Length: 510
Image (cartoon, rainbow, N blue to C red; front, side):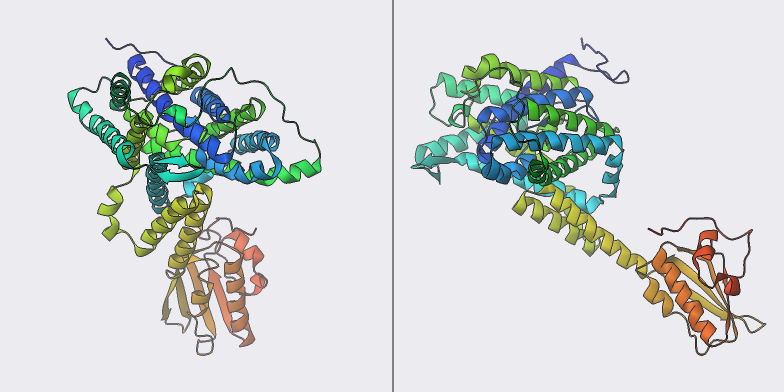
């Protein structure tokens, strides 16, 4: 008998069994990743686990939508590596707290809606690039440290690792055909752990990455000078971290919206993420953001509510306090196998099927975003460049749509009926439509099927009317909005006003 409970969302049913099992699975996959990122950045290992607990708990309760999982993500941690090397851990904590404040401001002023500006090709590139990054990051687990140098495993250790990873993948693939009552990834972790434990198989475990034993996150005020010089040091890092975290978070939210066919709240997610990062800065956490890999693990395990994220966060805390000796024995191979399957599931394979139907510029945008994500691991930069390229392409394509229908009526008046948007990109083509020298003494330019959208367009209209005025020719402009008429320098002389028909849209003058 399934039990349901409305947890923080009175419109949503919560299945206890599914949510608890999904939360346990997420916790198992989050621990090694958080530890790895903390060690990579030169932080104490526990800062990664504290971040996973704090981010996971706060965003699960107060975040923008059920099903999302946050933790100590590599996307935000990578931003802080340079600050750690130059100024130390105390400045990192201050930057994390400041990033949280900036994220809260974004949520309060409802700026999360700008994620709508991200086109679908950018989403394809982002998701595909991230899937490859997740997959490639697992390859590091096939290496070991020898005399201070990282080297690939060889011989029996490599074969054992490959065999255990293959077993994990096989369980994840085929167990759902037996039953979907228990998440296949959790079953795979338990089976591989049992096999390694009872047969005393020598293989890499969580303990080989770092110890996960510790206490409750301690309250800690960053020991830094409170002055303008300190702000100048930490602000750039905080701004980039906040941007990266919000970009990855809002894109992940959109992805979950598509998968679950529900709607999240981006501004609420910004506030929750910011609050969690402020707590991270004062409770010894390295900060973070939503983690797309763990979110997909959560969704694939059947979670659709907030409870799984809370269970995952509390599980990580319990492991830090009490369960470290057991968790430290978990084979890395099992976690690698789960993450490889997550990477395969994350990749948008449908993008290959529709690639022949996509415009070439959309394919280019997707490839560029994926490459930047893979090579630089900078999700915010990848998305920003993708949006810029898409905007430029849109402007170019829109500029080509401006056209004019020309005819001379029985009175000898020449008409120019303008079609398409008139804006900065189409002003040159607009000007080329007119034959000023050969036109008759009276001309009508009709904007019924066009729209003047910016000051560049206003300037183009001004210049055309001036060219006709120099030849003592009369120009009537029809179907212009009131603000267009106000902005035209010689409006009183040349505009044929028709109040009943002229539109009232506004012009962007900033």
